[in-house]
Image (cartoon, rainbow, N blue to C red; front, side, top):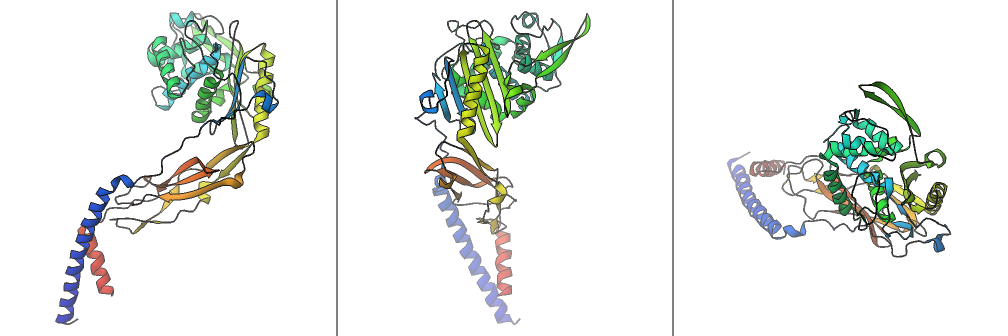
Length: 422
């Protein structure tokens, strides 16, 4: 290569570097000015349809004072009767107690192997109990069994004290969680539903019970490992020695209903007979709540009838994340020109009534500017599903690789390489 040609290449390189510096500065300035535009379409949450189904529309006859059927995926109401009427919940109160226990497990504040002591106060609970003695300890796992299977009031209080120091402090958390879940017709005064009255400030509604049941089943489906056990036993180990105590589930549907996943019964003389029944079939998850039924057989029959109605009127539509192709996207200021992405989870939606999968549409959107540096797992876009022009799900698209930010030397090297190959 002669002297004139080398001088020409060097001159071109310098001019290109100056041009690139100007362009980079201009792009950064433009990006800062328009930073607020670099966002995703906001999520539109699922709303409850106004034409909620009643017995006159569904043919399901309910003698209980209040009832509701919801689809757990979207939270839609499929049936309602006096869904917001404030009633005595009795032991279905313990759904919230269990929800907070599983939340503490998830947050690693407690473990299933932790030993839980029984206080004098916890041991003094009447009603349904497993007869824990003062000073007796049981593991968290055993306490959950006692609460889920035998509806043990003493175990519920022992767990409340173990997590929060006292039942009163635990009840504060119960009410905070109720508010967080949008339970507008609920107030808790204890953790087990024993001796509750509306006048004392302990009440809930069928819809509110469905909301906390849905939260439990969606976030902590492992509750079914306990709530679907028909019979079990625990070992009391005290100063008197070791004795066995049998547990029998109070939810008779776990022996008779196909797909049952839980969840909790409740009854007192004032509350009558209550039940939150959850079930899942073919990807469809439902919660049926019955409150103040006239007798125990009726609550099970009515809950089963509601679940039957839901399963006969709903179908599941799903799409695997691996079947959704994502085109590589351009990267600004990156060591790589493009980045690959992947859909973070599968799509699943429960179609009810006249809804048709033919009307489900999807579109893929990405950030207007994807700037380096990018870490694997960063959100770079989303897949939006709509039904009848209403958003029903939004699934994040995540970066499947790291992309480092390119520096001045990197740009110089790229340009010089191109010039030499030109």
